[in-house]
Length: 560
Ligand SMILES: O=C(O)[C@@H](CO)OP(=O)(O)O
Ligand SMILES: [Mn+2]
Ligand SMILES: [Mn+2]
Picture 1 (tube, protein in one colour):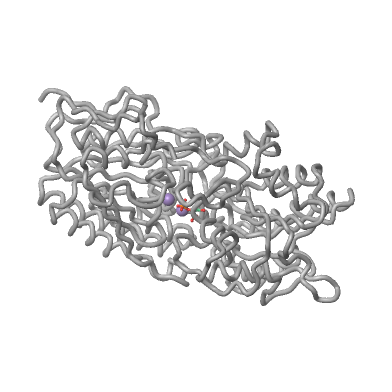
Picture 2: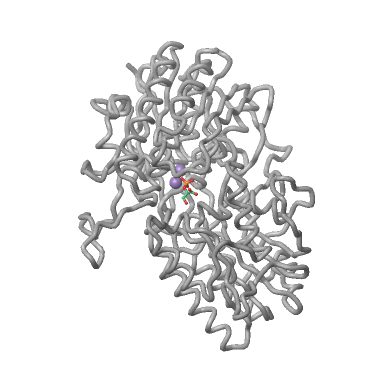
C-alpha cells in the first residue's frame, strides 16, 4: 500500500474550526434522494430524524453525487455501489476503480502482458482454464462484456479447454435477466467450439446462495460453490446452463440471487468441469468484498472454514488483487487501484480516536473499504472497530430492522464514553432490504435506520458534538424500473419491473449538532460535488485542513 515513509502526515490546524468535538459520522447504505412517490420507500417510511435534518436547513443539507465518474466508475450510466462509495468517502479523492482499470487493461491488451496472465497461461496447453464469477452487466462486481473479451483473449492465446462457472445476479440487474445473460454466454462458447476450443459452462448458482458471501457471514455459501465448481457436486444436474437456469427459475419463489447450485453433466451423468490438478482458475469479479472468502478457499494451504475434500494444485489469479494487506490472491490479472493516504490513516497520525461499527454484512464497508481496501487498524491504540453479527441464512426482507437498533446503541455508547473523536457507522437497512425488491419490508427497513439515526443524533446532542449524515449510493428511494420519462416501465405482460439494484440518484449529506461552529455552511460554488468531497469536510470538522490533493471540502465558515 502507499503508506510510504516520506509522507508528511501532520495535518495543519484549521484557521477557524476548533478541535476536540466528537463527530458522529453516519453512512446510510442505499439511501438516495428521489421524487416522492409510492415506490420511494424512504418517502413512504416515517423518517422524522432524517426529515429534521433537511427541512428548512438549506445551509446544512444538500445533495452530492454518488455514481459514475464522481466515484471513479467508467461512465455516468454506472450506478454507485458500496465499494466505490466508501472508497471515495474515506479516501477523499477519486480513483479509477476496478471496472475502469479492467476496461483499460483489456482495451490496451496489457492484461495479457502482465505476470498474472503469464502465470495462468502456463496451464493452457495441458490443463483447463476455469472462469468463475458473476454473470451480468451490472458493473458492480463484474461485467459480461469483460468476460466475453477474456474468453476470446484466452482462446486466441492458446487456451484449449475452457470451463465457466456462473453466478446468477438479479441484484444489480432485474430478476430473471439471468436467462438472457446465459444465452449470450452460450452463444460465445458455441463460437469458440466452432473454432476447436472445448468450451462450456460447468456449474452455476445464485450469487447470494453460492460463492459470493462476504465478511465471513456464512461460509456454507462459499462451500456450496466449492462443491459445484471444484468437486463437480451439486443437488441439481443439467445438460446445459440454459436448461438449468430456465428449470430452476420455474420453481415457485425462485429468484436469480438465490438459485440453488447446479452442475452441468455429460451424457453419462459425469460433471463436465470439476477443477483438477494442473488447471488454471480465474475469478473474474473485479470487486473485492464478495471474492475474498472464495479466494482464501482457492489459495490458502491452511484452511479450516469447511472441509474442501480435495484441494487441486491450480494456478489461480483474481481479476484484481482483492485484499492489498493480505496480498490475496497473490496473482491477479489487473493491478487494483492504489488507494493511499486515506483520511483514516491521516486522522490516526493526528491523534484522532476512531470507533467504527456496523453489522457483519456491512462491517468491511466502514473499515476495509473506508480505509482504501485495507484490513486492520492503522493504530490499534486509537481505533476500535466493532462488528455486530448479522443474521445469516435469511433474506433480509424477513428481518428488515436488521441490527439497526444495536448499531445505534453501540454508537451512542461510544459517543457518550468520551473515548472517541469520531464514531462512524454504516446503517445497512435501506440497501440490504432494498435488494430483496420487497417494497413493504423496505419501508420498515428505512424507518428502522431512521430510528438509529435518532439515537446517534441524541447522543451527539448530549456531548455537544457534530453529526455528519450521508449515504454511499441510492437504492431504497426507487424500487421500480422506469422509462425515459420517469414513469414505471412495464414488461411485455404489463407487469411492474421491481428494481432490486442501486440507482443513479444523488445522496443527501447533512451536518449539524451543538458542536458545529456558528457560520459553518455548505459552499454553493463547487461544481457537482460528490462523495469524495466528504473526507476533507470531516477533517475540517475535526479542526484540520485537509491535504491539498484531496477533493475540496464542502463547507465554508462565514462570519456570524
Ligand atoms: O450486495 C452487494 O454486493 C452490492 C450489490 O451487488 O451492494 P453494496 O454495493 O451496497 O454492497
Ligand atoms: Mn452500499
Ligand atoms: Mn447494495
